[in-house]
Image 1 (cartoon, one colour):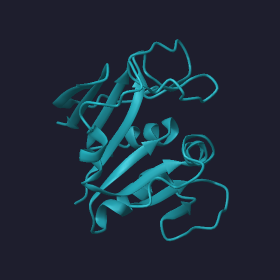
Image 2 (spheres, rainbow, N blue to C red):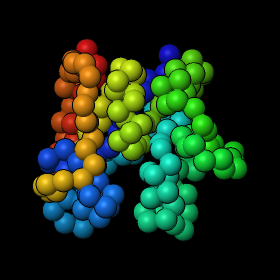
Image 3 (cartoon, rainbow, N blue to C red):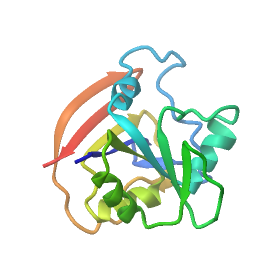
Image 4 (cartoon, rainbow, N blue to C red):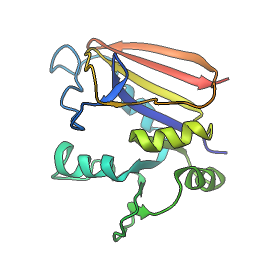
Length: 176
């Protein structure tokens, strides 16, 4: 069965976006991205991405408006708005937990939960995330969109790895 991994960055105080939904603070101590390439190692085992409409919109309008950066994957975008899908990007109006359960039953590599907070919250509530790859960015935002908000039950995790890169701390936890 395929594993489901959350791979996301958050501020030291637990936010994945500022009050306006911005993520221009997602950087380490410098513009030098030297050090461990956590992302490349992570995506070797991934063939499917799941994200919400807001995350998709931010990618195509702000973060990478010139090209779709996830062409090597099948991306599911959960949305209530009807949109035309393509081979690589599939817009679906389905409960994220149901979608993940269905995808886990299919053949393939692992599934990456890319964001946003609403999708993550629903999957945490259903205990469907197997591995948590969380990069702590060295900034305190004070407010914004929290990664984990009102988790309704305890989920026990085991620390699998810690890596430091450019002032950022990459934590990898798996469900116990």
